Image (cartoon, rainbow over all chains, first blue to last red; front, side):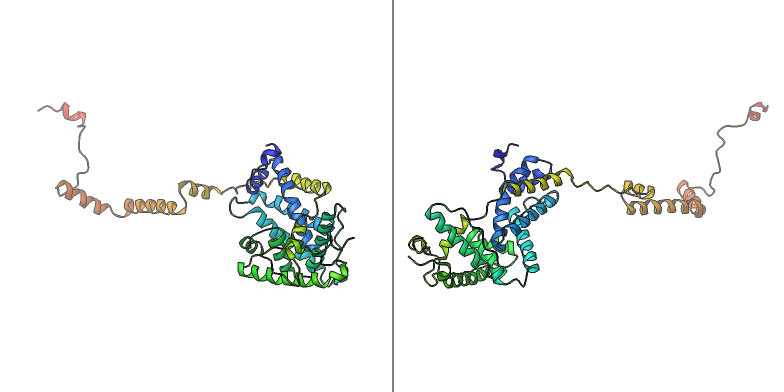
Length: 192
Length: 134
């Protein structure tokens, strides 16, 4: 099947095609899901190299589960985000004890027009603030406000109740706001 | 860097977002959505290579274990319950054959209405009979 013809095909169906030996399905899934998995793991870990490792590992697990995937039982993205979260948790546990000073600085994006610079600065500040949150709060806030998932799907990914998701995002946002407000002067930004 | 351009984004207020210290978190979330790391060609190539490796080594279907002959026969007949039925029928047949000739005789006599069970009928008289002069 040509690659552009696969744009309309669901993740589920692509995974079944891949399991049946379709090389085009592998390419389509790689291009569709790897950027999302990488972005999510970066937001949870705050480190590009680690995020790439997690993304590759998570995708490898997807390839391995493909022959056993039962279509329609679960969403591929829900399963994949859960895998990413577990892999990130493992890495964060191994690195536990690392102080805030050693949290890696997010990589600077290429400077562009003023708007892009503002956005880049905000994204960088947010990423640093996210790293100060407890893991579960960070995960819930990222899924809800950056990845754009709805609470029921976040509950499914995190395997908790919707009420627990609401509680985590509310606490996470309060902590983020406090962290960002406290770092205005340090980061050199001022309200306009 | 002009301070006005690098504010905290209060002009992009989201009505649903609570404000903390005049901070608009939604502006930060919006910025982060457009600033995620891009997947490098190298990463995509590695992921695709993994996909190809896994695709090249499909999971072999589990070989059905070969059944011993007796089990195969039982399976062909419909399992062990069918075997039990067969065995019962066989034993019953043997038991009837060996143990109850009198009962069978009585039953036959009653059915035919005669006292003795006929041993055989002389349907083919011997040749001597035809040679007798009468």
